[in-house]
Length: 186
Image (cartoon, rainbow, N blue to C red; front, side):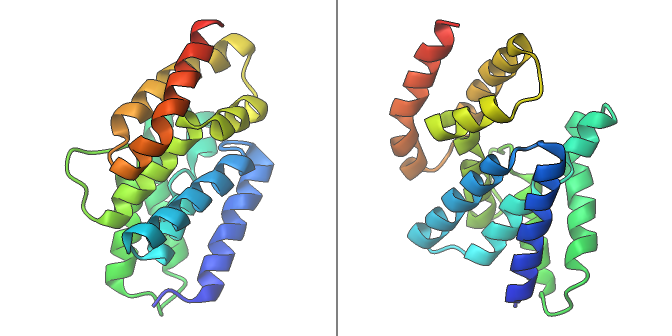
């Protein structure tokens, strides 16, 4: 059983790291947490696993980028999540494993290991496929204007193709089209 103190501690760790590194910005962590919680409730998934997944999936992103290892941020997050979750013996091995699958699959896969990992992937898509997320990306970016726009263009397409849950596609289709139109004018 995932204890409440673990949920609080991991959420705080993710938010503190975001405040220190801006990668990802705090607003985007809150956005993915919010989307994940709502989707878990709507779809009957384990909301605690989803919350830990959304907090930890990009936990090592800033360090990976600073070391020139952006593509390794998932493996780095998985290792750090294993260390963090290991401090809570009340968490079952199955729950720990589910959180790790959420981290591994948050960029999308053909066949998700679990509903929780699919929810984490789809919650992550709100960062670039919602107007709220796009504003968070733009305001939180430490890159140049051109680098930010180029990164957003790539991520919008990546996340659109990773989106798999019908409820998310329905919610985000109009925003995706609006964002694509907006980006075409930049």
